[in-house]
Image (tube, rainbow, N blue to C red; front, side, top):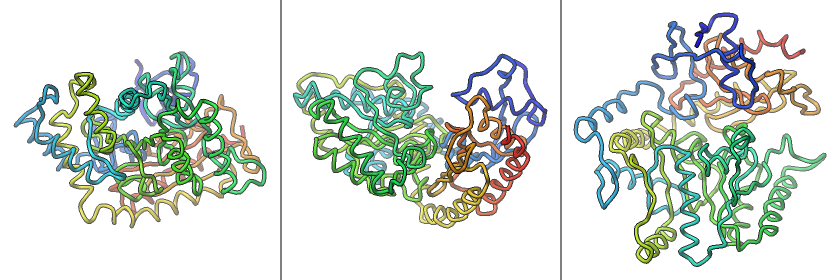
Amino acid sequence: MQHIKPNSPHARDIAYHMHPQTNLSAHEQIGPHIIERGQGIYVEDDNGKQYIEGLAGLWCTSLGFSEKRLVKAAHTQMKQLPYYHSFAHKTEHPVIDLAEKLVKMAPGSMSKAFFTNSGSEANDTQVKLVRYYNNLRGRPEKKKIIARLGAYHGITIAAGSLTGLPYAHKFFDLPMEGILHTSCPHQYHHSLPDESEDEFTDRMIKDLEDLILREGPETVAAFIAEPVLGAGGVILPPKGYFQKVQALLKEHDILFIADEVICGFGRTGNMFGSETYGIEPDMISVAKALSSAYQPIGAVLISEEIYKVIVTGSEKVGTFGTGFTYSGHPVAAAVALEAINIYQEKSFLPHIHSVSPRFQERLNRFIDHPHVGEVRGVGLIGAIEFVKNKSSSENFDPSLKIGPRLMAMAAEHGLIIRALVNDTIAFCPPLIITESQIDEMFGRFEKAVDEFNPEFKI
């Protein structure tokens, strides 16, 4: 494939093939953009051009690039035990220590950890566990899982079904049977005229309740949610939303699965997004920042109540028949364990608290731009949505590719970010970012926006 240098006139085309909802013509499919090295919040391509990694890779490289402690952890474990498995009553010390740390630090009453290789696999496993759990409880009809429109929960068949974005379903024959979707709680786009935030929240809860009652509470097993919808546009929950969701779920004996794949390990200002929004989950999925993405690893955390049902039932039905060759891989576990050691140091969360106000302040400066409809964020994650008409919240025609083209313009100014649905630009830098680096990041984006301004007139 032809390689286009980042500073060339065609560099912006690279962004098109990165955007999952864009239809591409043949001449636009021209990548890839090759990244060769990274240090701190910066990466460098094969032409020597440096970029600020404004999305921490894919929302994941929380400790930045080339963190020596993580490299050492991997190297040390590679020399001692480069691989072993967790089947047939076998395991290794790193995975034991990691499981113990995770269940102690997690919100809710988590008791056990099951390891996967990604967030997709974690949520795929959640679907299996929900089915297994209810079969063992003698409730074979209670299997349906409700996710939300606009959510992202992965891309395997089961996790892709949970995802509430069209590109995850089109031509894949998804969602699979038993996966349902309720309304996206994004007030900016989905509120009624003159509807208050409280009224909007109540309507979202009513939509969820109506879905549960329509399907039959005896058939609905679980509800899954990201504390902040990530790939769906960095959408924060409206006031009181999760408290009312949880009350409704408890009323109908429905499990709450918290997808912490993006929000976990400090991103929202607390160790978990569930803590930020008062969620007390029955099950949790983690990945990405679990190892700062230095090794592929994810995990499912479950409560003691669910664990007891699984153990008791397995004694009757035989082997608990799920797992992966690389579940609890010792190198991945060792790296994740060291990442958690860093997260639990006294300076970690205070650093996020100290720099988050600058991040949010610089993010919110864009609200005065004539084509910015909404700015939203919490902690060190945020987004800017560009619209055609500020007063009506009307989005640009998707065929104009405003978001992807703006993303490519930012790359020309040395900033890697991501265009999401509705021409939303997401920011999710490594958590180690400093105030001066935050200014540098948004300064580069301001230059990109200023240069792109004439394009908004199309």
